[in-house]
Amino acid sequence: MAIQVHNQAGETVTLADAPLASGGEAQVYVVPQYPSVVVKLYHQRVLDKRADALRQKIEVMAGDARFAAFKGDDVLSWPRFAVYDAHGRWCGYAMRKVGGVRMNVLAHAKAYAEHFPNLDRVQLLDYLIGLLTTVERLHAKGVLIGDYNLANFLCDPASRKVALIDCDSWQVAANGRLYRCSVAAPDMLAPELHGKPLDAIDRTLESELFSIAIVVFKLLMLGRHPYDVVGGAGPVENIRKGYFPYGIGGGGIPKGPWYNIWSHLSYKVKEQLIRTFKEGAQSPASRTTVREWIELLGIYRREIGKGWHNNEIRPAQPKDNKQYRGKQSLPAVGSGA
Image (cartoon, rainbow, N blue to C red; front, side, top):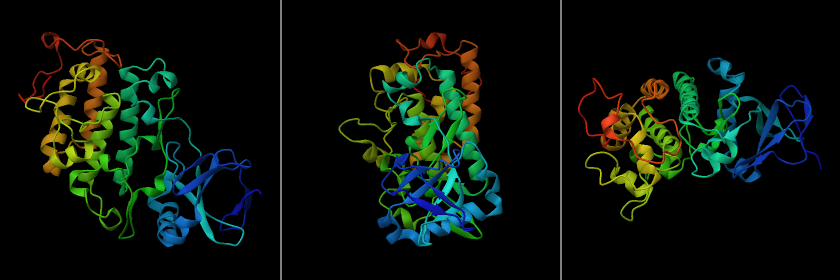
């Protein structure tokens, strides 16, 4: 039986017979009548438990004037308006339909070649810079993503744009109130958030910066997690301990393709990754900012164009340090470069 929903004004639309996407909290449907729109319908068990909280956040995101520009942004599936079922009960919201390949494909040692056969470092950096530019705009309006999941960032192979989905999980500050982000993958969380109830704590810009650095690392390192399994401990335990094995005194860079990739990253990028994952693990104020990442990755991109760094996704050999460039005028810090 076809599903019908209506907006607050009473306009009714029929959704596609099958969902476009399905997850633990909701299903997303195409609206055949309006090809550029999709509707997210929450599962009944989710509504039974959290309908009031979800509705309040969605109404603020869709109705607050400070977020008006996001509703028409082509790289955000921002909530546009609430939808109701045939009985007049709130059940979800409508948003822009965005497309692309999930970013976790770019962080996979084999899958990236299928969807991005000509992928190089410059294109990878374009996606990262595009994502971070959008994140910076969100931060400026009091929005923190909180739940960093590469599957929620969609990369367009043609335009190099990155679209963000699942906006309803983010932390939103509006009208003197904070609408929290209650979910996250433990291996993407800052150390200070581990072991705490996410639905009862406020995310901070500093905790956000730690997750952003993990995204940067995973994209540049072909899916390797910065705190991956080393010495028998997994990523979550290593995050809690602040054990990052890269750089001088770090315990050893994992051998194989990751060693080669790390050696070819720019000195400045490696410096900031080390700063965030070592010093920043215990000192949130030491974490690299979004603006710093945008500028550093832009410099790295330009240096690739000058031939200073390898443009390959998987360099066959580590870089010869005698030929290393791009390190001038920087303080002497241990980067393991």
